[in-house]
Image (cartoon, rainbow, N blue to C red; front, side, top):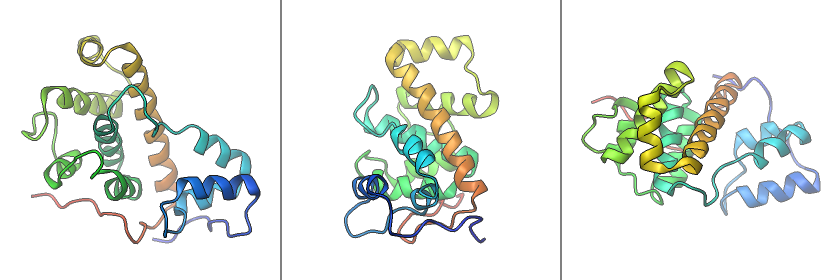
Length: 183
């Protein structure tokens, strides 16, 4: 697979260079996704300014379960692999849980009842771009309104990211994890 657009190359504008420095782990090249979006400073700015990786209404673990599940459902191996490599440890997601984001469902034994709600939410968002009333009530009771709003935005953002990385045909980062194989 060959990327459809060549990533931008330095020199970058001061604002893009600064953002890339903030977003890139030490010792690594900026993500191909970021460098590709850097072809257009306005789009790069909008994309990097719209992230939800800060301390919000969800725990890091909850956030990453949603990101991993959404990316898995969308077949976005590039983004799934980046998040698995960079955030799975911090989110305390083990190999079985990572595999369950790709091949499992809400009934997978690795999920708590609260986490199973997240998986069901991702599945509903993927299948219908909607949440039925029963699931909405469960989400509201388990997480509260601000977190439910964040869940909606998080799932929507990573559906968009999935479309972008797949349509661009981005090659996986050399250090990213691959989708786990089905067992």
